[in-house]
Length: 138
Image (tube, rainbow, N blue to C red; front, side, top):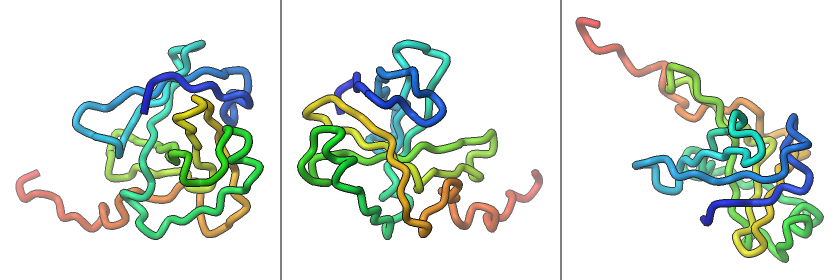
């Protein structure tokens, strides 16, 4: 994915910020990215490729949302979820209710709020992380 995307509607909570750069995270491939505002570099988000963590994730993206980024079908967009990563990364969550669409052809992006209540705004990335036993001696 190339770097800069225009978000005509901004992101939820940041309607005035319209341009964001997608930054690779070393060693993360396409699974984790950073999304940083070019207008306010203090505003940034961690993005995760949700299908890597939630193989059954299958959001129905409304046609008008695809049109808003210049896409004719869902196959023309890349979809990421905004993640919240606390100090204990095992407690990281992803917002599956409001994915972020990227059209690599038009360079437009959009955050979409799904009407589907199957997906939450704080879905644990590591479902079994709390069951991982601590190493002995720690």
